[in-house]
Image 1 (cartoon, one colour):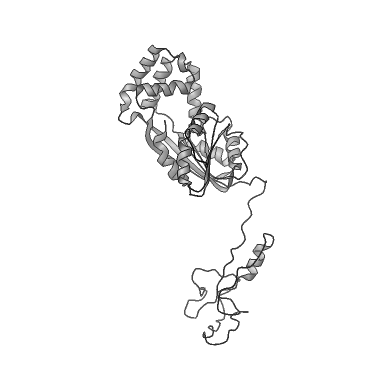
Image 2 (cartoon, rainbow, N blue to C red):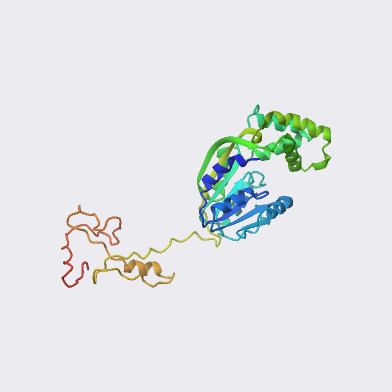
Length: 335
């Protein structure tokens, strides 16, 4: 139904070829398979609460890099820090407690991982989608309170301020909410759209043939060459997970990389130091030599462009002699 917003979803997700992707509310697996194409050397896990949809998704997928799991994303036992990206195309509005659900999903993301989802904007009272859904609800005999409850759930994240609030509580930072207006496809034709709507409502064969015919009459004006198409607006929300890791501690900074360049004993490359994780940063820091400042450069500019000064005050003050010619014996450049 919201496949017309796939481009906006995946553009915001920026899935890399080695990423591990989690698809929340994957349904029959369309977005899961699209994500697997982008993560060509990664893996994708799709989660949905509907058993028929999960079975349909498994039947239409033969890739070993795609796994479908039956479960509720609010409480499903995801492995901690196991995913780089989490996506959802209309599967996050129905959470009972949004802050708790997003906190749980955030625990499945590595520190700095991304969450991108699509949720509907507030419907226009006279919009074609709201008007059509109201007519279809009255035709199927759906109680008014059920229609109100459905609209409330669909609009639970329709305000950007609410999105910022719940994701801030869940530990996500750098929140971006982008409005996108596009088209929703309800089916290949009016009859197919009615089948989709009654299956989603769970009424199935209980809808009389006369009611189905009336529903088709309501949808027939929206038939196009692409199917039954209606205009709609959504929010594309994207953000990074910034809170504590699964072990309860903030992620520690990585040690300095082993930068190699001309050493002090001779002109040439120093070997990369062998170091374990414990004390590795200090060993690498001792290994790095200050960069010589050339006479031809302004005061305070490193002699090798793009490399930082690793000693406080290096490159300032008294000028040092230039290095000896290549033919001269090597000598210490700096103490």
